[in-house]
Amino acid sequence: MNEIDNQPNRKVAGQLPPAKRQLLNRLIIGTALISVGALIGVFLAPESPDEAKARIAALENELVNAKRKIGELQWAIKHPAVQENNDIGKLDPDIRKRHTQAAKRYAAVLRQVRAQGAADLIEWFVARWNAMLDSPNLNDRTGRRAELLSLLVGGMAANLDARDYVNWQLEFFNGNWLGDLHYDLDGDGYPGKRSMPNPRDGFANVSVCHIAMALNQTARNARVLMMPEMKCDQQEARMSIFLQGKTVNDALTELVKALKTKGFLVVERIDKGMRLILVGPRKATSRF
Image (tube, rainbow, N blue to C red; front, side):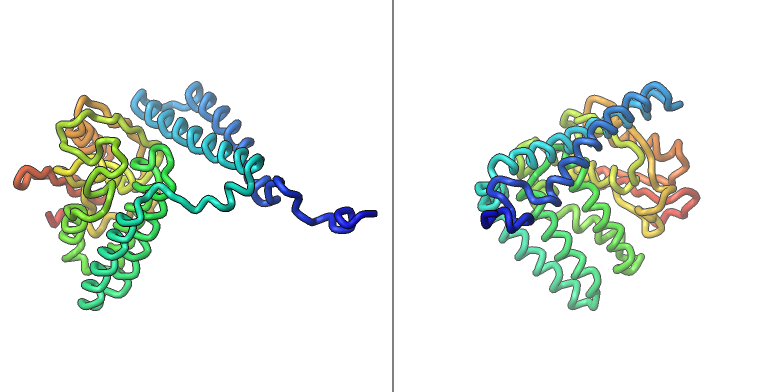
């Protein structure tokens, strides 16, 4: 018996590691299940047309992401050496450095006012934001990045004085240093003005905070903010919606209408050309 036969667990060149191969199999099965679930959901779910559109849009996003991951893993099987040595990402190193330095300055200010938890959260957030920009996925604005922003905003509620929470959100979202939040970095046109064409985003059973964060990446002259009482991670904060209308401003109006219909507290105003929408839980008291 030769040397290779005596080492049954030895990795053969070009072979995908067992963990990745198992993940590939799960993704393929998961994609098939999503497809079947989408068809069953469309025919059996007692949903309104808008809810059905939102669910279909979300399922299509899941399918796109699952297929992309499958493609990446299949490519890794055929090109293992190149895949392992490819350390070049999409994010410009200078922009990454600018983001990181700005986060450190931001965190230093928070530590000066003894907000250690908030400072740590900002640095955690920017590191992961950079990672997403470095390895982007389709629909990040409404998907991964919106979810990450929701985690940041929800986490800050636990680390800041409630009296400062809304003002912090305004200050953070009105900055000019973070790519694809404060300015368009990936060239998709967003964030832009409220008068821009509505991308017609759909969301199925996600947190209101998640939807708000997607819109905060869409418009520079509009902000959807959370009240201190709003708990982004609770089940009652979830909803499904398809944001209709010709413009981004129409999409914001659609969100406000849906929130009020579902019993959320919503207060809005225009301040120096900025449309401000403050969202609270059901039966909450406004402090806006």
